[in-house]
Length: 133
Image 1: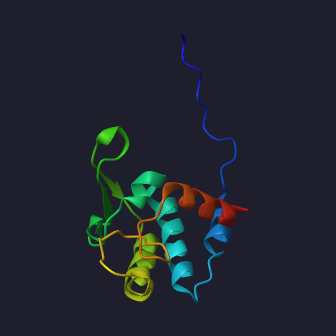
Image 2: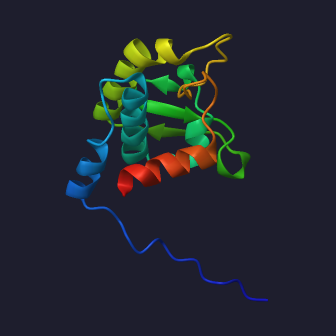
């Protein structure tokens, strides 16, 4: 059978809309700083949801402005460019928020839940969708 055609989503955010989404998180809380870093990473690098949840702290190379994605789509490793603004927010998250989210043994995941665990793909989808609304 022929495959059904797959189109890109019809709605793409304008630059101004994307900026408004980025301004949503409450930067007075560790969760807000984490969410801002997540949104900036998505916007800057184009990383996929599952790839973002699997990032480890050591996968960010701020000096080279890259993120190393392990076992992404097709079980392939790849190196993604990431913008300076996203790096600044990730570094802020690493310095100010992540230490407050770690609980128990730190397994090295870059972005953590409030319970100190790896983010889930479904949770991430829901969270970002709420900010876009």
